[in-house]
Each structure stands twice: as structure tokens, then as C-alpha cells.
Length: 497
Ligand SMILES: Cc1cc2nc3c(=O)[nH]c(=O)nc-3n(C[C@H](O)[C@H](O)[C@H](O)COP(=O)(O)OP(=O)(O)OC[C@H]3O[C@@H](n4cnc5c(N)ncnc54)[C@H](O)[C@@H]3O)c2cc1C
Image 1 (cartoon, rainbow, N blue to C red):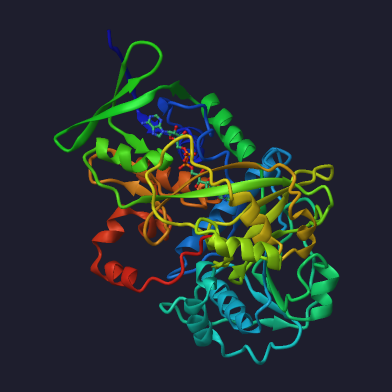
Image 2 (spheres, rainbow, N blue to C red; image 1 turned 135 degrees about the vertical axis):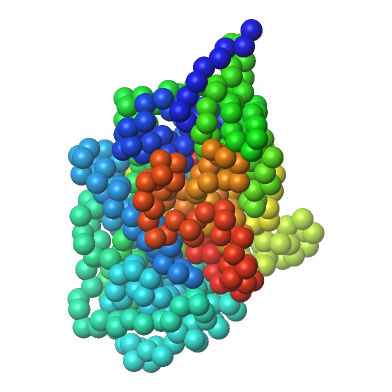
């Protein structure tokens, strides 16, 4: 027997995206009959696997990503204010480091671009300020030749205009709290200052860029805070698998679910696809081929019992391509093994890490995605047994103290999930070409930090409320614009770590 129900809105996916949508629809817009469907417990597929970091530091073209993230951070700060910081929001920042003098020009250009896009001003500490004044174009050239393009792009589409400030003293980030008003970035080229504040970085480090409206928080608490409020305002959570969406005359009519009991049919005029890595599959239930693909990203948690990375450290990112360090003997052995010889290559830039937990914790999270080919999402995810060792050895280039763990690595905890991405690494939020159907997906590696503003944007679309200026940049209809297609052909960096 089939159970029939009705709902104003059915959202498929109780990850952070679906939960943020339900929160804004019920708590902010006052809808009462919203159903959130998931075959798994809330937040348990991808949203609890993240590094839980945020930043307003994103490349162009245009200011859409910076504006979305600034709005999302505003909303997270409001939630933190309202809950005595239940979400554990901090403002440690992201610290990009390099051992390559030539890359300072990239730092300068990226900071100038970020300032122009609304991420906040650049403060310069140390020599080289004048040398790197006119480096916007040089930064472009460098970043396309180096791995830095992954993180920074001096967009060719935006004029770079900013007035860097020098002569101010560098203010380190606070251990806890999120109320610092410091935004933008500090570039430090003064070697004494780098050693004073970041003595754990490689002595080869010649410059760091500290992006300030950035840090991390508890993704679980952010999700549960919004889910509890959404449920208190009428959201119903149903544990079931979405098996079909009924569409008639180009409009959504109902969804079909299969859970533990009898199959269910929920009649609804509004359906939101927030299915995370299932975004493409759920799109096909609507008869749509959505322009997304999936990449596997893995995270390692190590016990740093030697305290190599201090607990107050910011998010640390090494921006140089990195060979792994091996002894001569190890090198010779690897060279002789066809299966292992790849470990002698130079790996791409971007290995990053941060301390996890409070003052008593000694956990270090490490991420380094050196394989980014698209894959079909399958669960459980496939874990590369070499990954923890490779990630640790790569990170040791930036944090040489970690070499003490070589050959006696404490047993790591490894997990991860899929980045569901569009080709230009921007999300899909807004109406789909089936009446009543909406996209809330392609959140790649930024779904947690973007969740609050994305839920707000989705709810504004669905309720016909005024839209923010960045709405068109995230709508599926952007691909219908020939000018956007042209832009895509010359798209710079994705900004993704
Ligand atoms: C290793 C790693 C590190 C990351 N680090 C960060 C970070 O530091 N900061 C950041 O902001 N982001 C980060 N991310 C990205 C972030 O985790 C994701 O963008 C975000 O979790 C995506 O949320 P989602 O709700 O779209 O997807 P999910 O959390 O996967 O939720 C989708 C839900 O849909 C459900 N579903 C799918 N199909 C069906 C169906 N047919 N029927 C019923 N239910 C269905 C699934 O069960 C799932 O629960 C990271 C991701 C990874 C993997």
C-alpha cells in the first residue's frame, strides 16, 4: 500500500545544503510544511567529512564568490552571537606560505584582486613592497605556470585596483573567538617577523600571506543548530530514499520515496535537489543532465604528540610544488619499483593542515589532493593506502618538524568524500528548467562555508523574494549566456584548495 502525503516543499538531502535551505524556508520565511528527505542520518555523507574551514578569500571573475562568502560569514557570525558561539567559530585565518621569491608577486596580485573584489585591504610587512607594486600582470603569468593557479588567480577580467597599506604592525590571530574586524590579508616578507610568529614553518619560507576573514568552526554544530530550528518551525525529516520525481506538463507534481515501511508519495509543487554527490542522479529523475562531476578528496587526522604544530596555528597552506623527501636508500628502492616510482615525482602545490580540537587535543588534519580526475561517486569511498604517508611527507616541506614522524607515523584516521563541482567551481543555486524544481548543489570544497548564504539565496528564489546581486552568478541559466560561455573558455583559477 502507498502512503500519500502533501508538502509545500520537498528537499532531497539532509546535508548542510538541504538543512540550510529548510532553515531559511521555515525559520526565516515562515513556510510550515517543508519535508527534508534523506536515506542517511543528517549531515553524515559529506558534510561531516570536511575540514570545516571558511574564508572570504576567493578569486573572480566578478565579486560573486567573495560576496556570497562574505554574506555567509555574516550569517555564521549572527548564529554564533545568538548561540553563545555553539558553532565554535574562530578567526585564525588561512596562512599561505612559499619558499619561492618569484611567488611573492602572485601573493601581491592575489591580494590586490581580493581587495578589489571586497575581501578587505592588503597590509604589507617587510621589504619588497615597492618591487611588487606593478605585479598584477606578472602574477597572472606566474600563476598559470605554477601550481599557485589552484589558489590564486589575478583574473584577467577585472581591473586590479587597490592601495596596499604598509607600516602597520602585524596583528596575530586570536586563539579563540570570531569578533576581530581584521579582514583582507597581511603579506609578510620580513624574515624576522615570519620566524617570530611562525617558527614552525620551514626556514626556506620567504613570504607568507595571511587571509584574515577566515578560520574554522564545527560543521556538525552549524548543521544541527539550523536543523533543530528548522524542525521547531515545521520541517519534517523523513528517512527514505528518493526514487522518483513526478513531472507533468513541465511542472513538479510529487516525489516517490522508499523507506523502511510502505513506499510513500508526497504531492508537492516545489522540489529542491540538495543531494550532494547524488545531485546529478537526482537531476536525471527530473529529466535533466546537470553540468557537474565529482572528485574524491581525502583527509587524514594524525596525532601530533610531539606538538610540531602549535594549537594556536592558523590554517597552513604550502603554495609550492613539492617533491617528497626520501633518504638516498629509499629513493633507490622506489626508483626500482614500477608501482612506487611515482612517489619520486614533484607533487602539485596545496598541501594544507590545521590543528583540530581545543587546548588538550593534539590532532592535526592534513589534506592534499594530488589526484583530481572526475570519478563516479561510490560508497564506501576508496582509500589510497599510500595517502597518509604522502600527505605527511609533503606537509613536512612546510613543517620540517614533522620529519620526526617519518617511518613511525602514528596510526592515522582517514576519511573523505566527494567534491561535486561545475567546471568553473561555482555552485548551482536557483530554479531548474522544470517548473517548481530548484538546484542547491555543486558545493565542491566550500559547501560548509557557503551554506548559510546559499540557503538564504535558495529560499529567496523559491519564495519570490528580492534576490541579491550575486544570484545570477549561481543560477543554471548563466550557461545560456554566450558571454558567459566565452568567459568559461578563459576561466582562470578555481580558488579551490
Ligand atoms: C575532505 C573534504 C574536506 C572539505 N573541507 C571543506 C571545508 O573546509 N570547508 C567547506 O566549506 N567545505 C568543505 N568541504 C566541502 C563540503 O563538505 C561539501 O561541499 C558539503 O558538505 C556538501 O554538502 P551537501 O549538503 O551538498 O552534500 P551532502 O552532505 O553529501 O548531503 C547530501 C545528502 O543527500 C542525500 N541523498 C542523495 N541522494 C539521495 C536520494 N536519492 N534519496 C535520499 N537522500 C539522498 C545523501 O544521503 C546526503 O545525506 C570538504 C569536503 C571534503 C570531502
